[in-house]
Length: 390
Image (cartoon, rainbow, N blue to C red; front, side):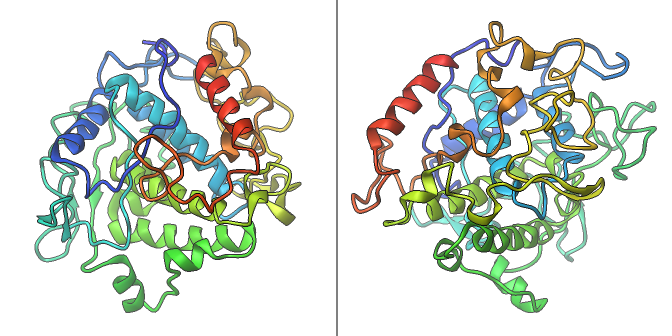
């Protein structure tokens, strides 16, 4: 099935995953599972040279993410927004009514409450799998991911991805990882940060940051802590996107980015010319793997790695490489039409998705005092045009 075979809304309302109905959590889990089936595979076959094909939509996320250099630099937030927006579209191909929900990291995911204020653990075999052993040691994620073949701890041949991200003999993206492990820490993220004597920025402190560079450094710091807090596979940036829980983390990252953008009196945060401040004209700096990616760098690998301003040192990834070249065939793949010129300044990247704490059931902003880029009509037209072109 091609990614563009159905019309899918780009920006459905995203909600706190602990406060949605059990049925909606089931839908999200089921959508993840479906994306790792034969129905949802990119073109090609495993042993195609030089770039493997036949990769499930789920395994593709790890292939895209594991080699990127966007961490620690200006493009961290917009690049991950693009990744998440794209993945949300894929989820909705698997389950049309699903949304890209978030984990509010102010809550302990093992000891939170649901929409009826009843105790809730997100780490069960009915939703996200296991979090850790009773003695706090690492544990494999288990169900529902084991039977869904998200990993295979007992391979009978060499067709698996190693826990060592640079193991060249075991890194074919079409193969399952040999494990998805976790070692979640006790208490909340904030409590654990205090325990290890790490600075912790509250949501309000992040949102009240005066500039983009200040905000994204604070937000990325807490994001980094969240990865280590869950631990195991997620604790390594090169393997993190093998674990479905990572997307709940990144939906929350993007939620806070969106909240910063929508602060009243700061309409410039919705304008591509001004949002990134002093980092607007930044480009890729350094030599892989020690480099940072700038705002002017094309969003890679979706732009195709044969473009002048693509991210240096990143591997080609199908179908944005030979023999598919989706990024060069806009008439066949309309959603890919802007890839060869799309960087962090693109309006669909700057435009914040819609979250339940900022938008009502109809997608309208809850607080009229928040100005939406000075001209909501312009943004509504952009959303409508983007929807029709999907």
